[in-house]
Image 1 (cartoon, one colour):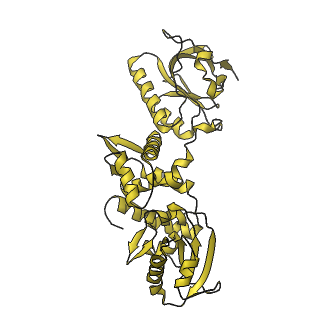
Image 2 (spheres, one colour; image 1 turned 120 degrees about the vertical axis):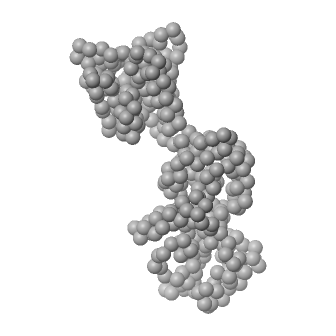
Amino acid sequence: MTSVSVPKQLAPENLLYERLQLSPLVIRLLPPEGVEDTVSEFAVEIGWKKQVFRFAGFYSRQMTPKAFQSVLWDCMDKARQSSKLPLIVVPYLSDERLCLLEQNGISGLDLCGNGIVIVPEKLFVLRSGAPNRFTTSVPIKDIYQKTSSLVGRVLLVRPRYDGVGEVKQEIESRGGKISLATVSRILKALEEELIVGREGGEICLLQPDKLLAALTSAFERPAIRRTFTGKVALPWNEIPSALAEAAGRENVPLVATGEGTVGKYAVMAKDPVLSIYCGAIEPLLRQLPVKPDTLFPNLVLQETSDAAAYFDSRVDQGFHWASPLQTYLELMQGEKRDKETADQVKALLWRQMEGEVRL
């Protein structure tokens, strides 16, 4: 396997790489033309057998979808203006990005051993499967968790906003607390992932499926301090109102869990047990005709102070039910039957976002 060391001016220290390689090709990076200290544009020679092909190389250390799209566009624009072949160099090329390069006729090399080299009618080399060695290129997970996740959650309810302040107002109107600086940071990160864009000053959700998948992957159930399982001596249909009245008298936050709410949004056969998140268990027990019962329960109380558990609840006759999104996220943590039911809730989420239904 032949490889060539990268000149110092083309080797940013934080990436810690020393060479590019793509067997059986011979790769040589040339000094930048007319610029002595640049890492964004440079010349590359690639040899195969007795042939040598010259490329205009573009390097990007950023690995977000937006950064990759930007360097791809720059490379395509350069190809139109120059007789040189276009080539991208990035830390890592996934199979998806290699496919995108092939579709656009652009060559690309990464620092992990993957790449594609295209010389029309003369050369085509594709190598994939090398793992990503640059963990910093993975999207920041915390933008989809805890308080930060509230930005993505309101985008899935309402996909267009006039500005950052309006996103903050929407979060607060649904019971969340978040700073303007945090909203701005999360929106910028979502733009880098091409999940959010800006059109004429508007903030727009571009990829709802990608956002929902990221929220699902990062979702963590609320931290539960205590759990009470029991039986309330009331008809099933009277339990929600009794709980709402008790919570109101004791000033205790209360909302049905996603599991306890699923019947509102989907058809799913389940035992008649109402599962609840609440701020404190004891005050509610004092107000209800309830006894511990783990054999034939109709009520489960889960004590939590996690603000996300109560966010965007939907009120019906004074009782707070989980939002469709919260219900979906919880179902997706379950087993096969739960995930199948989640598909019904997802369809409802899209209808809600498109304004077909109001929940």
